[in-house]
Length: 294
Image 1 (cartoon, rainbow, N blue to C red):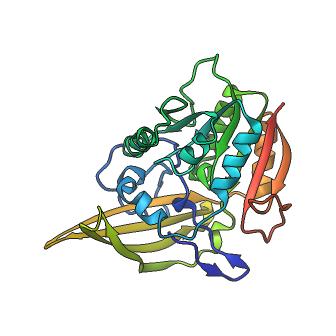
Image 2 (cartoon, one colour):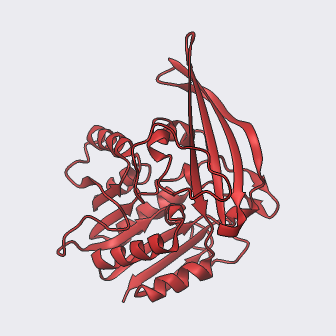
Image 3 (tube, rainbow, N blue to C red):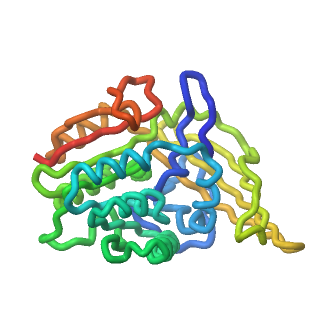
């Protein structure tokens, strides 16, 4: 899903930014869910993995990578990225020299990230773990000075119990005084519903395959969910393949998230409205929360 213009600013692009890490099951196709169906935030990401970097290369560039890189360099110590996906944020942060762990439940995403880490020769300080962010797979001795939840990751936790479990799990592994950074996608319900809109066309696999992305957007307003139905049509010569899956995100306001963080034992230190450090206001296109473990 691409960033678009909308009244009042830019529309959000949650799925172009990172992985949910909230738990993935191996499925060939995610069924379409109606408004009353119980879609899960972990659905669709295995199927998305082959196209994730291709689509990100076509979305507008963001400053969030620089933000996380500079924050990790300033904090120092050991860092953890929730839902690291293919390494979009992980690799630039790893190049700062910090010790870094990425966690994700999608095996295809992790496999791609591992290849990229090896190619970048960062294996000595960047490690990858397949695991669920609701129950982080680290022992009691694990302590991180910085935990990063990049663009929209926590909004793939569509159930309140899953978000509470994730915040508690982060609290268990973050060092006393450690910093927890969260990037929220603003105003997901403002997305207009549409069907079968061609979002991108282009080549992948070094020009051997032509890909078209067709997208539909629908909403479950009662549960504050926005659902992106994806269809990738890949053509190689005379052969054409279609892959369909759905991704779902939940809207949480800054006030709602800060209350949940405080209940989980965090102290809010900053709420920012852009990646350069401007204070937040409700019209901002970027919603960043920084919190310390008390």
